[in-house]
Image 1: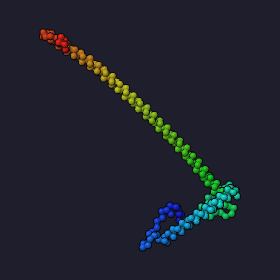
Image 2: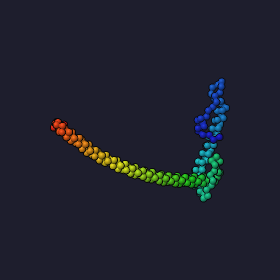
Image 3: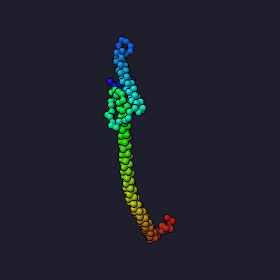
Length: 190
């Protein structure tokens, strides 16, 4: 069983009836699991420290062919093969790191390129839409200006017609008043 710190934190023991505390057998079993996993981790840690020390001391040159990575749970090779294996593992790790970095850079560049093209497309669409809206507004303004001119001409013509109509009625009123012998309207001060 692979044991993690979260397993230790979240472990729940059954309460025992008729006495206080947890079931001692269950607690002992769980602590035994912890001890086994802890010992594995300590052993593995010591092996890795030994490999690192051997590699740093330069005991064996790195091999040209890269070996397949050994599972972590296996015991370390005995004797002079340990430095070569750790060097191979380090080379493999470095190569994988470089590949991941290159993939990340390529992906970053692709995302930036896609974002720039998308931004250019959005800007182009916005500019086109802006030009269309301005053209529409110009057409509406021209239409409204034409309508305003028509209304002004109508007002001027209407005022002229109204004035001539009122003046004509006033003349008719004065003419009818003089023929009947009455005093003209203009003389009354209206």
